[in-house]
Amino acid sequence: MIRKIKELFEKRPILREIFLYGLIGGTSAGLDFILTIVLTHIGVNALIANVIGVVSGITLSFFLNTFYNFRQTDKLLQRALKFYGVGILGMLLSNVILVLGGIWFGYKQAVEFFGITLIEAPVSVPEGLDINFIAVKFVSVFIVAAFQYVLNKFITYRKKKTND
Image (cartoon, rainbow, N blue to C red; front, side, top):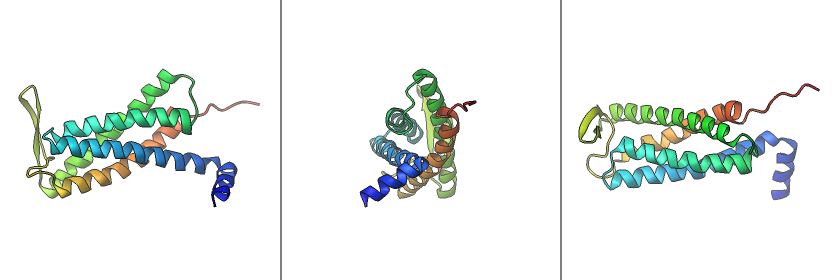
């Protein structure tokens, strides 16, 4: 079975790449998800917890994808900036999904900065860990992962065309 999978990956490298991206993404998303839930559970604002979770996931994902999946370790700083740019877009998309989920399910939380309420966003866990928040966060991870794969494939790890 493993031999057949290896042969398939050798014949179709894109399948290996997608598989590894999914595996790496799943690991990174797991880190993101767990950090977000734990931080929210201990009282950190949901959107701030989401940012911490996402940035941690992006960092892990960048290093694993760069060195093990796409294996493009040249121009590391340039690739890192692109990867984080894609990650930030994904984080914004994730926050939009959480806010829309908050509107749909009716949970909300104020976003404060040094004690000043910036916005009252419809995202929180008012009575402990809200199952609707968890469900929305879970769904957002898959939507954001697909979005980021496409951008990273064609921007961050784009291969230059060679003129033979």
